[in-house]
Length: 273
Image (cartoon, rainbow, N blue to C red):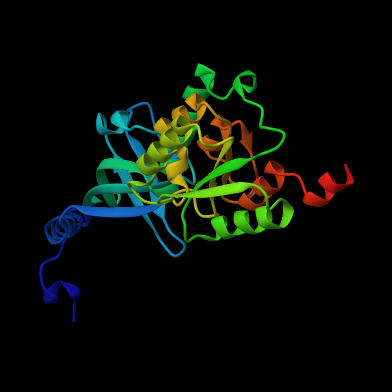
């Protein structure tokens, strides 16, 4: 039987129009998260690329002027969150997503915000070595601002007890993660610095992702550290983690345990002296 006998014969353009109408009618506005690939911006100002994951990719277009309103520079490998409508480019038969909004996703956006704030505070001189205060040669009373139930506080107390049990230590409990953590830490730091009770203040937290450690990248906290009347030591995360608190503090320790070792001498060394 001839194929023409089975129904209407469609031209490629008619078929693509039907497919486009089906796609646009079946899908509402969708959000897609993926990695940018094959990014190009021709003279027209339109933006073309693919969004991909480990198993698939989808072609995307973002037309002027929306592409010029982006708050970041789209580049290869950046992970983004995009919003748009599914359609089909009839001239080539390409299935694609036409976007009206795109932003950096997850850690990429946090990393960009971190770098921008760090550059601004650094330009102000907030991290200058000349304004760092020396730590006392012999610590008498230490304030440890941290979670009272985390591994960091246990490590700090264990090292201090082993090296120099005569030092007085007060744990000032705060949240170290979440939306209210930065404000809590900042308020506790200001209170401790204004009290006149402590020779030094230690900020401590165990390791985690950039998002987990984000409270210690808060601008108000960095300014409070710089303005404190007593020396502040920052020990946030692991050795490879750097927070704005580290840069603003008078001393940055690679870990909470290392901070405790730096803060007090060993009792045996004092006995030998």
